[in-house]
Length: 358
Image (cartoon, rainbow, N blue to C red; front, side, top):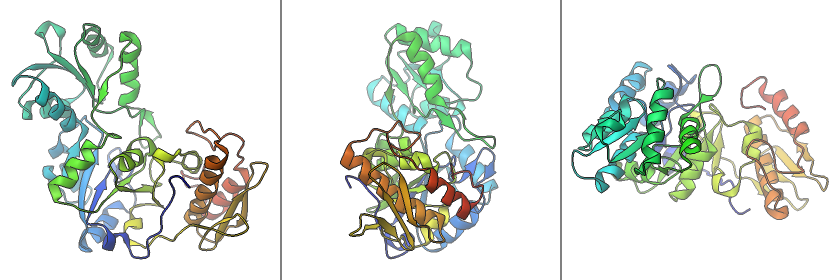
């Protein structure tokens, strides 16, 4: 495989020295903790693995994020949180005079990050800003998007904190910053520079803060967390508690493939089985075995009793098939010509109605 899964004989907490955790879909969804996440993180830190929270969500200041985590039973300080708003503010601070005005299309997290970087956030082109930056904010409306469009059309430098198309909520995915960025991009006929994931700076800065030599990125999104891990030269663990489903994982192209997959954060506490190819062409993960036949059907040779093992074997088989045939994927279903119907039925039998089994 060009970029595939790896095995790890020891628990991950014994192999890595820092876990760079995404938040939305990994630790919490909306105001509530992902079930079992606080307990898993307590065990992870008790085992000696350092934890930092690296988030593309630019709407809240680090101390607000830390307070949220603490309220969920996950002790954290503002220094444990690295946001894409901070990354965007750092980029602008290196390029603009001190106290320069920056138009903000976003929330308080982005305003605070700019102030802490020595810049002056403003909300109107009438304040004569020298740049515009955009980050997710639940109250961003048409008037502010129109002001941002005005700034971009005037030729001001434009930095987006991220281009996440969705954010997880208790009711399913909702429009994210990427959706709002697309509105300005369409109206202004321009594209922004992006400061957050999947670009490496957030991960590199977090690893530097902790003096880490072997970090692992933990996330629920292929297009930000896992692509960012590979871009930064770090191993990436996909957890199935957020937006990535089985079919999305099967469709992952090489730059976005995870190195490891687990059901949730307890995967940090466990070894990870290797996925290997047998002489018969099937890919094996412990008791699970999957192959893709000549007609493109995902054939479950053995389901085993662990749905995640079955998904691991299936990802290896489908990715290998895609790499060998150069089959294209659209990001939301398996590559062209691949039929995963039988696989999804087996996953459903093993895992029930879990949200990721689709």
